[in-house]
Image (cartoon, rainbow, N blue to C red; front, side, top):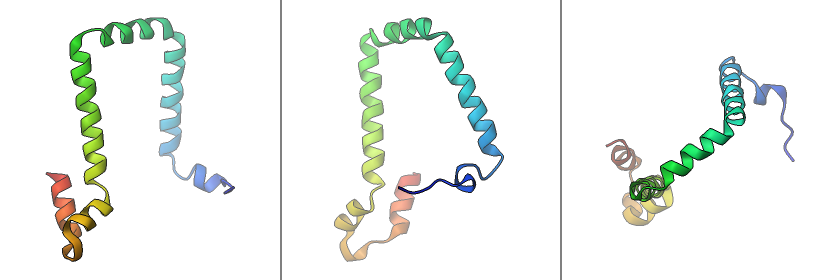
Length: 91
């Protein structure tokens, strides 16, 4: 087990801002969990939800696949150039 020191857990001031915002979001979610659950349930009922969800899943899978070095090494072989991969990811 790797020990977590105070320096690796909290090294800059930005973390205090992020953690306080995250705490506020969790408090809001817990306080309004009934209405949030009803809203999510109503959002998931129309057929357009399936289309939106499948689009997000496709986008996430595609971006993870394009980002792997193993794919680029197998496609380009000895001619692998990292610039080509970075250029395609940016476009």
